[in-house]
Length: 332
Image 1 (spheres, helix red, strand yellow):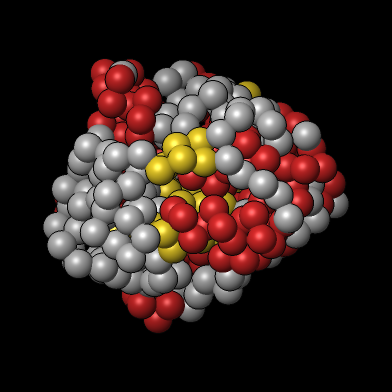
Image 2 (cartoon, helix red, strand yellow):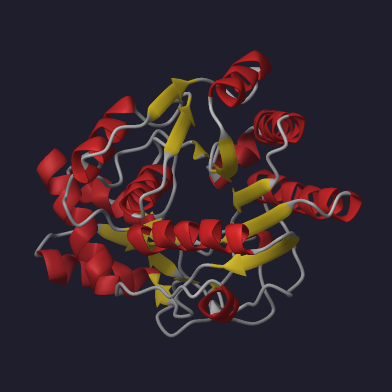
């Protein structure tokens, strides 16, 4: 039996494919390469020395989904596919709702048709909005501040309601904030994106001279005036998804959310300074004004995942900075 990985050619998806294959899982990958490339899957094969089926397809294409499930014995789905830029979603809310919700609906309908009832959903820490306290745990109120985050909350609500209606499902939602870093081999990492993703991606663009400088928000009530975020190494995050697959197998049924984080926050200025000192690279930046509606601090409490998934983030912020640059400088 195989695991279907949607969006498996993306930054997080490709690293998760590596960890799944290294755990002797059989995988099938679906991706439309909207913001990724088949080259990443070639690197996955190179790193692991293993082959797997790849379908260039879109979740909006129901016949394609039917073909994938018909041709493969899919045991569970790890769902990454979807539009992912919070900034872009604010400019194109209808596009994000249409793509992310319809695609997930189609996927769940196809799973139901084929009797596949184990679903690992790659959600987001953005579902917490601007939390009242940090680290924030899974029982905190969900308060979306962007259309992107709203789609994540809607999908999580749907999973709970589907489970309430049919408790043969196993639905696990994984919430995380800012994935960064790269695979230790230097073959997989974060590429320049058409969309703004995170501060680290912007730092890498400046380091590669793909942009001259960057501006970060200031004026926050923190020690250095910049916002604080929970950065997680992409390999740790990938291993968290592997742990969730294992948990889904062990669990007869259920619906549960897990934070995948470090429990420690890093400010924008600290991240910038660390990146420069560790990699001996100059990053030109300015500090601007506070960004509207942006949380001062977003740090996740990973206690539940530590205990129930037997998972813990192992990489430091220094390793994140080192690995991210090691990949991009060699690919630039």
